[in-house]
Image 1: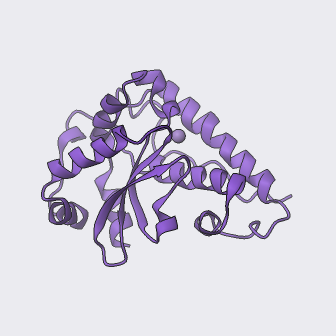
Image 2: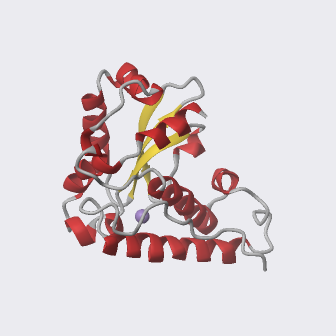
Image 3: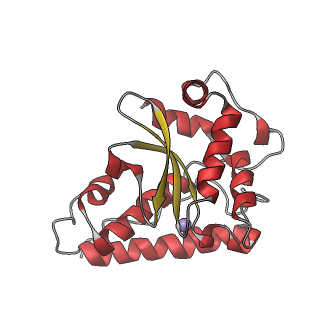
Length: 200
Ligand code: MN
């Protein structure tokens, strides 16, 4: 059996996101939770029509267990690759010349208004799921709440930025304080990567 999907390599050290995300959380979240989704999907798609498909296409066309595992791989790949190592200097710097930052100002009124709506939608998503910043085909930005393994690609939107609100994403570091975790994540977002996704 050809193993089609493998665990992504993180572009930073496992402790590089501290104190926002601990090394222990990275080791469980990337090393165990995401690894399990990869292992499950590789078993589930063996010998099926999905075996030769790119991940986004599997997410768009599948249902049930295959959708759940493929969606979680796509979601976590976008999630882990959107971060940069934490430094005090960079934690609050936003380059307002970036097209994605200008588009956020245009579509949400201000960067702070966008952050407040994003955090509110992440905090009020009941149960497990993901909150997303996504773009429609005209480049207009929207925030969506997706339950479980959901991804805005299933609505024809391009996913740009996401926060994981499954408890496994924050319970080691923040216990039940989901809102505090979401608020903290802004400090490690690599806006250059989000801009690349938006403009490609
Ligand atoms: Mn997760």
